Length: 166
Image (cartoon, rainbow, N blue to C red; front, side, top):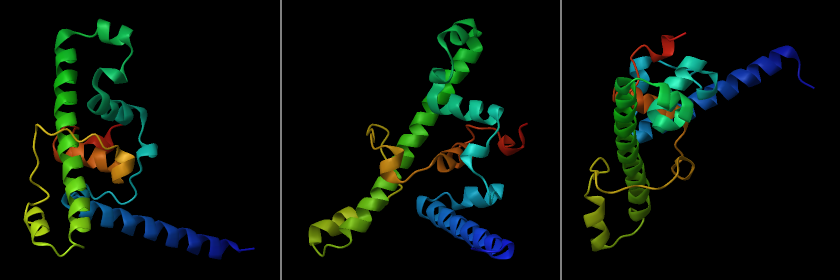
């Protein structure tokens, strides 16, 4: 089998590959500036602490992150804030899904050499509609929770010190 040095070298290579794939994905999704802003190289969703998970789930799921008992015992202002954050979060996610879908579609359409396709390709991927609801799942679009956390940070739905919360 492998000795300790070989295992360490293999592990480093795997880590480097994961980081390059992540950076490639962030660049593709347009999150590279946010990724670089927070300077997070080894950020993994599963390694967040309980408070960070709770903040993220509150923005992602709204009242669904709480039990009915907890919601009924909350002050009105907190319920209103949760509803506002959830609403903004859903809007941000929907627009992000539209951008990713448009980028995938543009890649596919660029293979065809028809004059009708050129009209579609001229529309920038960043042009989204608030009225259009993208119901594709994160898995279908290749979006991971790390991407959503950075997206929420970019749009200031999570606090700037999110990764420092203990």
